[in-house]
Amino acid sequence: MAELKIIQTAAFQTTNCYLCGVTFAMPVDLMQHRRDDRKTFYCPNGHGQVFAGKSEAEKLKEQLAAEQTRRATAETEAVYQRTRADRATTNLARIQKRVNHGVCPCCKRTVKQLAQHMATKHPEFNAAGE
Image (cartoon, rainbow, N blue to C red; front, side, top):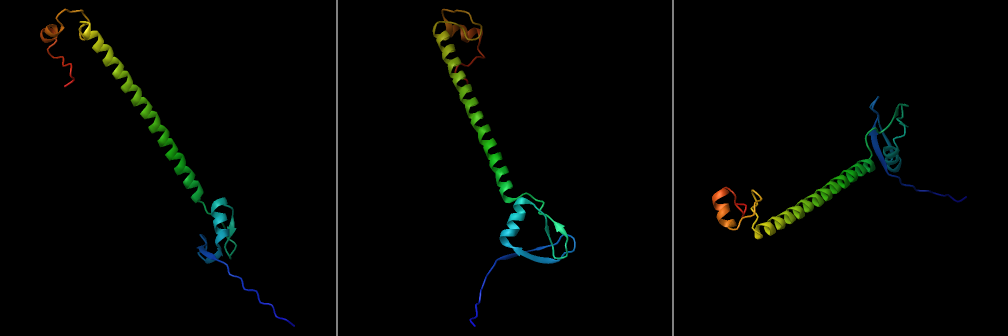
């Protein structure tokens, strides 16, 4: 008669029962499935248990969602700041045009000698923004 030998290797991972403390081993892929699906598994003494924490995939999904939210917020803020800058540029151009036509930017009166008017009537006003 011929003899047949089968050699099989498997990777196991150990864990401890939360109730009785016995250390036992499970195949690595089974343990990973239980961490992911959170289904009940049993220690050798029959105590049912589950991995209650979030799986690595759930942690990564939450982290991705948080990063996407941060990115969307940053993009919205960038659009807002560009809009503000555009409005400020438009307002400055409008004020410069009015000043070029002799309109005082403070009291909105038309003045022939605008520079002299600004120096005497509005000395606190600084056109350069300094």
